[in-house]
Image 1 (tube, rainbow, N blue to C red):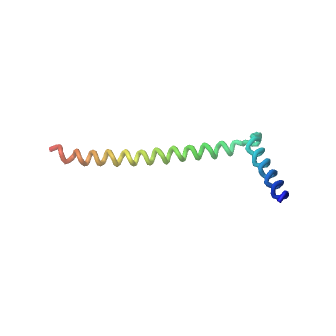
Image 2: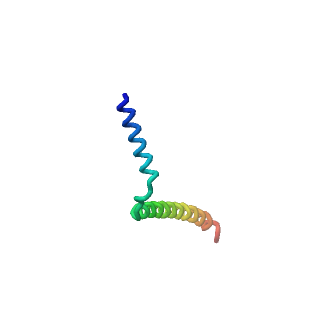
Image 3: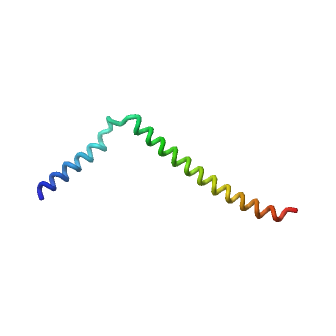
Length: 68
């Protein structure tokens, strides 16, 4: 049981120091974050554009029957 506790403590310390130590941050990590943010923006803009297009098309269809 003591061995399990010691291994858990070592694992926790390794996990904690990995996130506290930021000297190893390289440009690749920033590029990956930039790509993920860009993909999220593109996906959101595409979804929003499709929804706006659907609303405008339905509005245009309902108005086209009224005008002579």
